Structures are given as structure tokens and as C-alpha cells.
Length: 221
Length: 221
Image 1 (cartoon, one colour):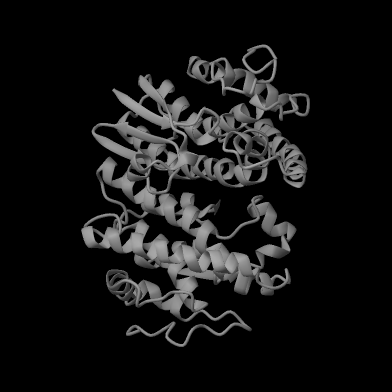
Image 2: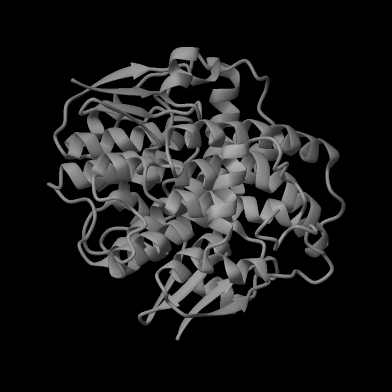
């Protein structure tokens, strides 16, 4: 059985769960309190981060490496185009969300509001929250700009880029940090991806002590 | 002609330069003061980061996406193994250096000492420098641990992981932040990679106003 050591509100864990589900790979989810840095967990991933995937007798850390591995070993359905330039665009956008968006938005809102409390690191930092609230507007506009040009974020076909973005947005939606009225194209895109069977397990996630936004699991939001 | 918009002490730019040189692709280097966020540059890469590669009529941002593109379009010499599990290990380590190492070490030392001054953001933050000095020891030990097991960081063959690591260490060596006496295996590995023809242009780099460490360009250091 495939096992995923994860945290429910980690966008990197969610991206891998979406990819596993799209590829119809059943997985056992193991909640990992990564902040406690248990020796057993650090042995699996010295970086001390989730997700870590156990598959094919391997222990794979790093969500980027995991997704490329799944794409190489379970090619159908394809979540990357075939052509190198189109693949570069998918990877650029995965990097955009997992690096820039994560740093400017997810870490400033979800981490401040939820992870910090959960890991007993104190109260949200107001300046961080303010900067995240400002940054998400720019990012939603940029996504809208991309979606005015393409059906999916990186082109005509759904790809890893959409799952990376949806993973972050779903965490932010949990903490009520997405203004779905800002951009209709982004809202339509999220409604489309949210209604996929792969999304079900994510919509069922609950982090004890933190209730999701009222519309979090609604397909019609 | 291939063009690379870069910053001389950007580890991400250096990684791409090493890959281009190993694959014997000639490139015109264009110094990009990315911190000035020129509209023309932001049009090429809305993330506002270097490097950006212009190749095959394309404009490619994101060093990770660029390296994968080069590996796919110019397969020889191969800088990634063929087998999916071995590829995952290369990508895990590229992520290790470009994410964890960058955040804990490069940004705390090179950026504090050089980039900050260059971009007129003030003086180095003593707490950051202290944390970088401490973190690099752990990272050199981890590299030593890997190199006790394998000839190169990710296995028996030289790979992208070695170039990612060498790109960061070369920037840190420029600012005299590497204690080469800490780990003999790491020193031997760096001597090997530093003596490759691909490294020459990096050893010739000078950032005006900042002299490199005395041994920076010595192959015998």
C-alpha cells in the first residue's frame, strides 16, 4: 500500500494527494506532526518537511520530486504535456505557486493563522497577515490573466500547475482567505477543479480546533 | 545565440550556466539588475527573478524549469540518470539546495553581506549572519555524509544535484563563507567540480565593489 506522510493543510501534501487521486493510486494518509521533528520522521526526510511518499519500496521526500516520479512511473492520465516548451511552462508555474505564491501568500496567511497556533509558536503577526492579504490580490489577478488566455493555467490541458495552484488555494479557502468575487475566471477554474473526484478527500479534511470556511466543501460556492 | 539574463552571484543563474557549459552550449550572459524590476524584465519574467534563458525562440524563467528543459532538448551529456528512483533523488537534492540550503545558508550569508549592500538595503543583519554561519556546518556535514556513500552527491554519476550544490557553494566561497577544512570529502568533491571547464566562467566572475576570497579561483585551495 502506498503511504503518504502528510499534514492536512500543507499545500505540498495536497498537491501530491491530488496527483495520486487523478492517477487512481490508492494511498494511506498518515498525519505527520512534522514540527515535532521525530527522529523516525527525520530519518525518512532529513529536511524535516512533509510530504514524504512511500511507494515501490522507496521513501521519497520533496513534493516536486514526488510528482515528477509519479508522472514518469504512472504516465496515465498525463499531467504534463509532451513538448519540452510546454513542460517548461508547467514547471515554471509549479515553481511560481510552490515558491513565490507560497512565500508571499500561503505562509503569510494559513501559516500565521493556523500552523502557528497549532505548533504553539504564538499569535499571528499582523504585518505578515496584511502583506498576505495584499499579495493574494495580485496573484488572483495574474491567474485570471493566464485563464483569459488558456483553458487551464499552463495551456489547453489540465496539468500539475493547476494542482499546485489548487492545493494552495484550497488551504487558503479553508482559512477564509480567498475573495472568490475578485476574478470570475479564477472562480470558474476553481469550481471545475474542485468538482473532480480527486478533490473529495481534500474537501473532507478537518484540522481539529480550526473549522473551515462555511463554503469550503461546497461545489457551488 | 542563446542569452541568459543573470546576476553573477545568483546561485540559480550559476547552476544554469554550469549546465549550459557542460552541454557545450554557448551563451551570451546579460547582467540583469533584477532588484530594479525594469518593466522589460518583468515582462520576460513576472516573478522578477533571475535567471531567464532565451533559447529556441522561447523566454524561459525558473532555473528548475530551465534545467529540465535543457536536459530534455540536449540530452548529452546526461545530467540526470535514466531510472525514475534515481531521478527522484537528483530532484530531491536540487530542491534541498535551492530551497532549504538557499533559505538557511546562501540568503543568510551572501545576500546579507553582498546583495543587501549592492541593492542599497542597508547593512547585514547580525542575527541572520550568525544563523547562516551555524547552518552551513550542518549542511557541509550532510554533504560529507552523502559523499561518504557515493562518488557524487546523488549517486555514482555527476548530476544536476552536484551543479545546484556547487553553484551555492561557489557564491559562498566568493564571500569567504566556506570552511574547507571542515570536511575532506566535500573539499575533494568541490576540487573535482571546480576544475571542470564548465566552471571557468564562474571563477572569472567579479562583482564590482566586492573582491572574492583570495583562494576563490584557485584550483588548488
